[in-house]
Figure 1 (cartoon, rainbow, N blue to C red):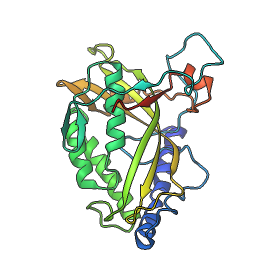
Figure 2 (cartoon, helix red, strand yellow):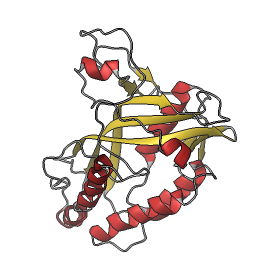
Figure 3 (tube, rainbow, N blue to C red):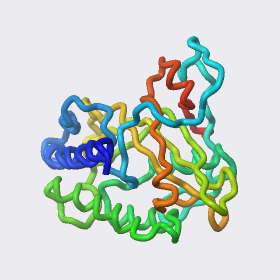
Figure 4 (cartoon, helix red, strand yellow):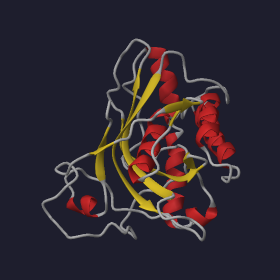
Length: 261
């Protein structure tokens, strides 16, 4: 495990601290205290991958340098519309680069990170059968987060408390192993915010902002599937950090995303 992965694991442990805040939010009918993660605003949150904070590295997005072009100035990527639903997860994305990014973004925004039963249904619907142990690993992370929130290890999110994940931007890179076709395995990094809504409809005064995490998806059995196979995991890349006004982010492939509907 390298230093970056150790930092990512520490960030996940720190995220468990939101549990106390979740309980308080339910008790007092507000989500103002939802985020108490300290100053490390860009640390990845717990979710369906072991994750790490992006840093400059081996992205292959290089092109002509344009210091005036930034993600907020560039044309956003309109996500493909899913054609199906299975186990609470959107499915039916096209077999192309936009489809891979769309599958990752929809999954991330829909993922029930505090409900182990729903999370398992979603993961079973969109995880590759080649990702040995992946589903159980992610459910274990959900249950650890629940225990940190003084909730039973298994069950739904607290009644009336809802969470919304909104992905602002993404960058991706094709990964390939012997026997693969180019474009059939894609790593997708996402930059997102996550906020809560209290049972009384109160808004989150301090949401999780500027979070970054990644997933690997591969085309299998007619759809994009999550995977953590070692032959792809060892190829993961770490792009420069996203900022809407950064030409370096544009150079490294970051693009803002928007839903078609």
